[in-house]
Image (cartoon, rainbow over all chains, first blue to last red):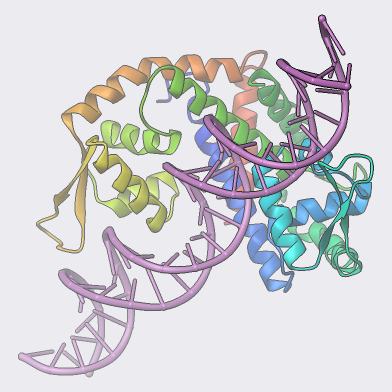
Length: 143
Length: 143
DNA sequence: GGTAATTAGTTGTTATACTAACTATTATTG
DNA sequence: CAATAATAGTTAGTATAACAACTAATTACC
């Protein structure tokens, strides 16, 4: 195994990605924040970028349409997101945060930093830049 | 977003991990290899390390028991893995590859390298070592 | 030896990911 | 204008992940 170049990279990548998500989800639970990590990403993007169509959101999040449909379904049930008719194209909606959704985002945003900093303890900004470069290269190589 | 330290790391991590798995799964399909990436990990570890109990495998793979039970269920259905009674402890099994399972592993192992190399094009062994260090640090920080 | 605590794996539930197929709507083409 | 192709989002199916609860077996303790 150690004699093969880049052995185990995908295993470590998967393991770490899962752990990061699990940790964040647990923190959300502690904070009584009533959504999953992936639902949060939807809300965060709607907050920062404003109302948009589902396929615009899918592009931002690199998620496929079925998955996103289901996430949005759950968020609309929780009354955190609404699907407004898109007058320019009856095939699509304008997704937007509700007032409650907006408030929830504002509550959690300041806390995300704490979650993030725990992961990066002992690592530097330089490590981060390098890490990003590798992740982006791999992503592009497989794209 | 760019003013926050380590912003987006989890997003990029998740995105890349998903893409890597997706790419590998597509390659498996092309190669007519009849298992998923996660099933492959089970088989690979049984091949390299020999028969073992489920909880030993769970530790190696960092997967929880329900998930592993389901993966092993599917592999036994495909007749690639068997659950042999563990005479020392009636609560557990010895998981092992079947003859067919062993053959399948031997078929695919040489091909895994190609899949891996595409991801790491343009990156070096040094990049890899650094990447591993970051992933392992994050994992430990959140453990 | 008997009882309580722990353990190995399973079952149930909810969520997300990927692929395939589908329906209604819009765009393109001749 | 009509027919065809493409598109937006949805539904269905299969797989994995995480958490909770459970059952049978084993271990620990008195």
